[in-house]
Length: 617
Image 1 (tube, rainbow, N blue to C red):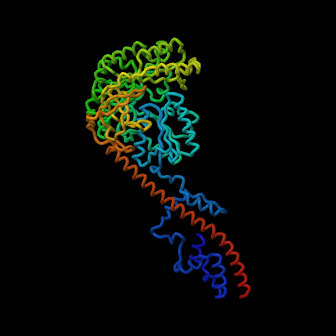
Image 2 (image 1 turned 45 degrees about the vertical axis):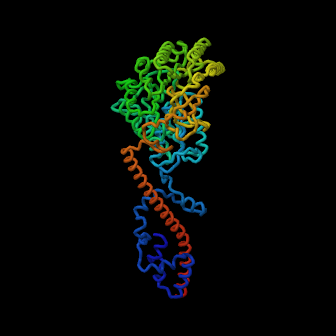
Image 3 (image 1 turned 90 degrees about the horizontal axis):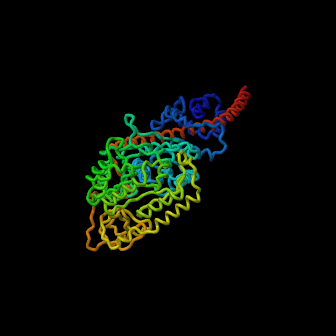
């Protein structure tokens, strides 16, 4: 029992000493000097109290609550620095951080599939109350969504982690780098969410904000069968409200010797057709006018679930509104060879871009064999020639790797000749980078200087021709979907997914516009809207605002409500625990302070008592 309780209980009640009035007066004066609260306590203690808890009102915390709150208390015997003590007292307990109110900055590197994952993670976090910010410095947590295709992308990822640590930010890592190599030294102690676990990003972020390190790297399975990944109907925030990126499958059937992405995305796993069609319908209902189909290899779609790419595409074409468009993603030559006739019919459809990305990587069969690409140059040419014949004007984009291990000058020259022959309007030239853990990294490497020179030489060939000069004077229908990097034009695409820059007239955004081509560059054309032409509005709903969350289904709203309710209860409980902790700390400090006064008072009392005994004797 503390000193205040004893003073009311009678242990220090001066009248109980049966002293003469003069003695009582002297002791009262001494006691009042030592205990300023004595006068107030004496006036209020009309009845005896068992303990200090008896003066707690019904509105205050109960004894059991204070006992529960003692887990937050770290008692100290002496407190010499009062100001420091007060600062510590006012700080909330370590577990009182409330998730769902922080600002999060998301950075994504890499392909369309990765960008789609980033949009899904942003949507879920925003739906649960987090604010997605474009200002990295003001963010409480950085979510870094990585790409493992080339060394430079991973270098940027690693540097961003270092910068986040220097700025004392919370960090969550995602994407293919930590999925493929989670035990790298620079990833130690950091939270990681796997490429198939993005539907649990809220859990990982919450635990990270609390100071914990969480790793979720498992695969999605149903009865032992690997799934394509997280559900497609999750909330998302589209970077461009007019464009929906749909991942139709994850992984692939190949085992390319240079590819690190295979280590992260694994073998082929396709989404069912009905789920993909439902996602497309939902997107159009939210104002999307352009859909991109993406994966590590769209051509392999459905082989694991008993269907194929053309079957999916015909189902999707049925639900595309007039004025909206569909763009196919990358497909490797072996799988498109089986469906050339059907693919040509689909690519001729007015609501499908006549565009296909078919990576050749090298025009040397020797190099392709070392890459384990499972096709030869003749296969690629057969695909390209057939589509160019059956789909007039089609855009065929391709990729080339310069300086793959074992590539000779003659091998490289064969690749140069292929580019000169086909004059690809869209060509992605990549210098070879050996990725850790891949077979190609163990092969004898081409000297770095040779790789750089070959990359420059092929780039020079690519820039030696202008693919769009012959189109000046044409009248084209273009779909306007975004703003140019320099903010001077709107960006549109014509039937062949060729880039056309048009004037920045807000009426054009998200619309199909007729233009006359009056200028061309290496990567674009410029179009002037036809004065008497009509602006075609796709038969879709009004687009969502930039940053608005899409896909908030009723099921997700219920989950969200339950989660927010638990957060609210947790917040209230935390606040009660914090208040109880502060009250216990204050009572403990009062007890310690009074103990010192009590010891001095008792010494004085002993002296005075001895004095009075001597007088009365």
